[in-house]
Amino acid sequence: PENTTDIPDEARDRHGELSLELDDHSYRYYLGNPIVSDAEYDALMAELRGIEEEHPQLITQDSPTQKVGAPISVDFAAVEHLVRMESLGNAFDFDELNAWADRASAEVPVGAYLCELKIDGLAVDLVYEKGRLVRAATRGDGRVGEDITLNVRTIGAVPERLDESVRPAPELLEVRGEVFLPVEAFAALNRRITETGEHTPFANPRNAAAGSLRQKDPRVTATRPLSMIVHGVGAYTRAAGSEDVVFTSQSQAYALLGEWGLPLSDRYKVVSTMDEVHEYVAHYREHRHEPAYEIDGIVIKVDDFALQRRLGSTSRAPRWAIAYKYPPEEVTTRLVDIKVGV
Ligand code: NAD
Image 1: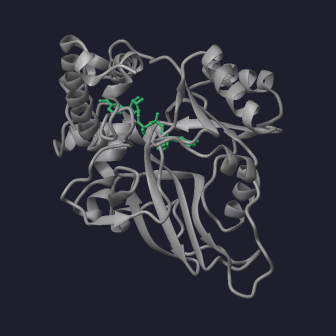
Image 2 (image 1 turned 45 degrees about the horizontal axis):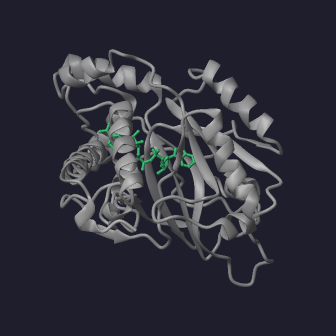
């Protein structure tokens, strides 16, 4: 293998420069105040990955290619997630998507894929103890997030208590999902804040959701019609003395979470072939604006939990899931980003 001293200065310098730049973009992005488009960020990340592929010695734990999110801000208390929150690997075309499926299928017998929308919001972790919401946190760096419980309590879609009419609530349940601002609510909010001069308009619904959720005063958050859709399970301890409720697959877990009253998407689909996955991706590429919220791609997950566990994760993302990213929509985003702040 290449000795670190053999790495050309040019590659080493560019690596350092890109790492700093990407860390800075991440930090701004998670505050809801990015200064470059997602496509520009993804291109810088691809360049960094390219350098690391050529010079693997440059890969350290601290490289942006190996990390999730960004360090948390001092405005909120730090909370440690019960189960680590991850990012997702990306595919930008069907070849990359098929390569992911081939790698998974070479390891385990994948029988079913769950396809769902990749909501362009921000990841939030919810903890329910004996059916009561006790904590909500941002993803942060995946291990430690920010305590935003009071703000999340203002979101109508997030139940304060789990519905126990079908079965008792678990002893402990940690779920994660996406908090977002529906497109129409975003437009109305921007009209309102322009009229009242309370704020500069937001560049897009994601920034508006991030800015609204990270308010220090939850009364401000309460005036922003945020919503949430759950797309994952973290820690889980079933109710004492109840019949065994075991999560066996992503889709079966969704059914149970729905019965407990958690907000779920009704657009996910379980399929058995990659041709059907392609159809789902193609369908929403054509009908991207049909949902009430913005999406930036499709997430494909191996449905079976036992297979998910066998496939495991890299340092930043599960091997059992991938995000198919749609191309950015407007070339004007950049201009808008520059003109309006958060
Ligand atoms: P990601 O957004 O590519 O994917 C992971 C996230 O997707 C999860 O944390 C989850 O919250 C979300 N998600 C939405 N729907 C989901 C679903 N149905 N199932 C599972 N997860 C779902 O990765 P990331 O680590 O959050 O961020 C990286 C991306 O963010 C970049 O590729 C870039 O597009 C953007 N970014 C932009 C800037 C910028 O300055 N513009 C900076 C940092 C990151």
